[in-house]
Length: 98
Image (cartoon, rainbow, N blue to C red; front, top):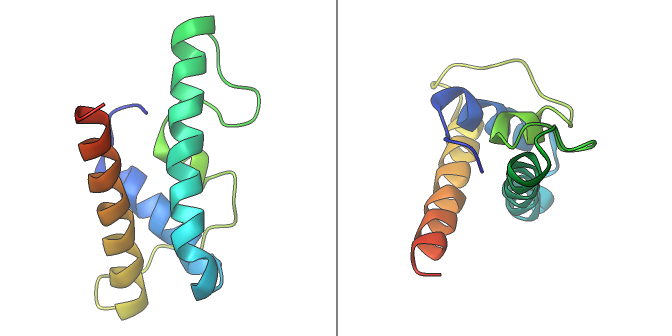
C-alpha cells in the first residue's frame, strides 16, 4: 500500500459511514487489502490496477459510495476514523513482522 496520508484515512472512514455498521470491520480490511494488491500491481507492472487503482487507500475507498466529509464532532465519523486507524496499525505491524 502506498504511503497513507490524512486524506486516505478520511476517505476510508467516509466509505465506512456509508456502509451498515455490521459490515464496517470487514469492509475496512477489504479496502486495505485492495490498496496493497493495487500497489503491488503498480510496482510490478508499472501501471494502475484495472479495478483498485494506484495502490492508495483513498483509491480503494473511492471505489465505493462516500458520505460527505463530516466534522470531528460527528461521533459516527470519529468511530469510523478510529476503525481505519486500528486496521492500519494492525496492517503495519503485520507487515513489519512478516
